[in-house]
Every structure is written in C-alpha cells, then in structure tokens.
Amino acid sequence: MASSITAAAIELIRHSLELAGSDPAKVGVRLRVAGGMVRPRFVERPEEGDEELDAGPIRVFIAKKITDELGDVEVGVSPEHGQLVVRPLSS
Image (cartoon, rainbow, N blue to C red; front, side, top):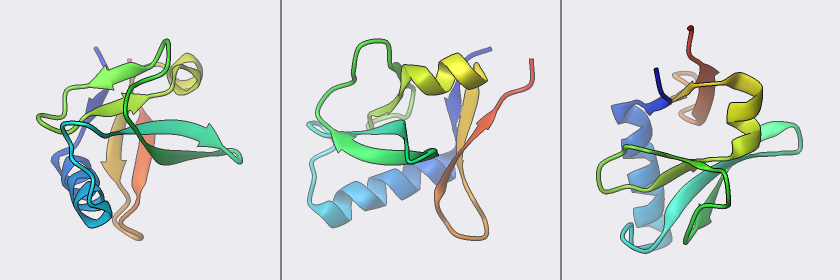
C-alpha cells in the first residue's frame, strides 16, 4: 500500500494554486508539520525524503516526518471545513 490523495483534495489544491496565480507546472504543495498541525505550503520542489503523490498534473509532496510517524496516508478534505486532512491508511 502507498499514500494516496482523493479527487476532492486534488481539486482543492488545484483551486488554491489557481487563486494564488501559481502555475501547477512550476509550483506544487508540500504538506508538512508546523505548530503541531499538518499544513500546506506552496513549493517549487520537494525536500529530501518527501513522498510525491500521484495527483495528475498537480504536484503534491508529503514531508518525511509525516510518513515516518503515520506510515502510508490518505490526503483528503474535511467535510466540515473544506480543509486538507491527512489520515493514516490501515495496513
């Protein structure tokens, strides 16, 4: 099993990049831990050890710290707040 991303999460990231005026061919989103929470950040490239998800034309990277702690994860969208969430996948 490997980490994955939902269609809703891909669409949320695509929309965020569009609102920021960022070109998805040049800018991706890195999910990292900041302030004890998983937070997205626009980046041009992953950091060493990051996992890159298959998200079609959108580039999504998960920080090594997240996968070290949780193993394989699913990136989705919370229905309550419309924000990205990272959930561990069952083994």
